[in-house]
Every structure is written in C-alpha cells, then in structure tokens.
Length: 338
Image (tube, rainbow, N blue to C red; front, side):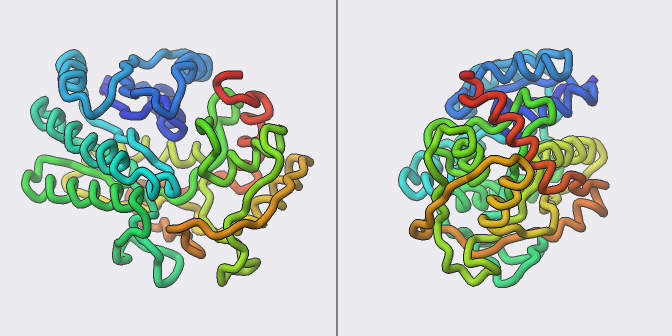
C-alpha cells in the first residue's frame, strides 16, 4: 500500500483530498502547522472513512521535522497544499507569503530529494494566468501574476520545472485550480476560514447563518454580464478527485504536466448569491464596495487536457456546490469550533 504525504492536509482542499486517498486505500501522512486549520478535522475524516490518517503538527519550513517524517515513513509521493492563500492579504504581508510558500516548498523539495522521493503533485492556481487576454483559459496561455499570492504560485511552478529539467527522475503534476467551493456531502468537513473570509462562498454562508450582517461585493463595474466578477467555481469533492487521479498518474508518468481544474463555466458574484438564495431559501443581504487590488474581471477554465490525460472532469453542478456548502455551514455555524 503506497504512502502519500499530504502537506496542509487538515486544510480545506487537503482534508477532502485525504478522504479520497483513504477511501482509495492509500496510507496517508499529514503534515500541517494548523495556522489556518483545525486538528478537529482528523476526527471528522475518521468519521467519514473509518480510518485515521497519521498526523504531524509541523511546519514545512522545519527541515529537521520533515527529515524525521521521511525517515519514519516510506513516502512514495507528496501532495503539496501547505501555504498561505489569500489574494488580498498577500498584498498586505507579501514577505510572509514569499517565506511560507516559496521557502517552504524549497525546504520540502530538498528533503524529498535527500530521501529519494521525487514525485509531487503541487496545488497551484489559476492566478498564474494573471489577467488573461481571453477566456476560456488553456494551459498554453502565457503566465504572469497580479498579486503576491499568484507570484508565489508561479515561482513555485518555475522552481519545480527547473528541478525536473535538472533531474528527469522528478515526476511532477501542477494542478491549476479555479475557484473551489462546496463541502463534503456528509456535512462533516468544509471550509472554515479564520477571521474574515477572503473567498466569496464562506462569506455568503456566514451571512446566511447570521455570523455576518451582509456580504461585501467588491466592484460592480467590471465588463461582465452584470458588472460583478465572473469565476469558474468547482466543487471541492471534484477537485479532491483530481488529486487522486493526478497521484495515480504519477505512478506511470515521466516528466512534468500542468492541468487546469475547473468546470468550464463562469458565474458572476450576483449569480452565486441569487442561486444560493434559491437553493437554500436563505436571504443574503449585500452591499457593493470598491474593487479589490489584484482582482480581475473574469476567469474560467478550459479543462479538456485533464479530461484527456487524467480521465477527470467536474461532475457536480453549481446547485450541488451551494447546497453542500450550506449543509456544512448550517451544521457547523462556528466551523470546527462548533
């Protein structure tokens, strides 16, 4: 049975991926510093799967801690989620983003190389496309970034590409996600941001559950159908499944591959709000405020390469995403602290 190390495995996308790995009979070892997640996730994962992953509370910048973990476990591949991930915050504390995301990945790769583990799936982002000239976005589009968070993702992609160029024994999959939302259908795990949510949907659900008075919509003067930003929202369970497919691909892959993960459908902020109100019968009062620096007008994926090469495509619809997100939030009004 193969052992997969999941950095950031108690986080939002990490925890859903851990569930799928356990259900597919992988051994799972999680490394997470819990800076933006909760240890309570572990019990929830065990409730869903009947299995408890091995857990280490450690920071990926801690070379000795990582070395000890690799010495203890025969890790065959790494799925790398750990890092800071808020676009707006990255403009306020850029140095922390560069240190955690870039330096953390550097340390991880050094320890992997020493231990002879040279297979990694990296959690990248559609932010590497910057402000795209057109949509839908394919993997061949030029890359750039409009904020420090996006720059860290792009730089890590370059790092991993250089690593593969220097040593073809490295097998690497870069997964460029669009906008993950939703929660596990059990309602046991979901998105639990600390402080004010940076992403749209947790903000919507926190307003609906009464934790916040109203939603702030950042700008309604974009050149889109209703003036609000358009994004490709993908169910986190679909996204987790893509990591499973990418991990399987690593077993027979040589080289480096890049895949967009999205539905190929763009929805505006107002469409999300109206659809949420329809499927949940909850009201979401909102007010329009200034645009956020670094935000772009519209962005959605061409995910046909993932379909062709990973045999993966998004299966769940927007209604599913919103119903599952609301089941999680209404059942856990204070997230994992509930």
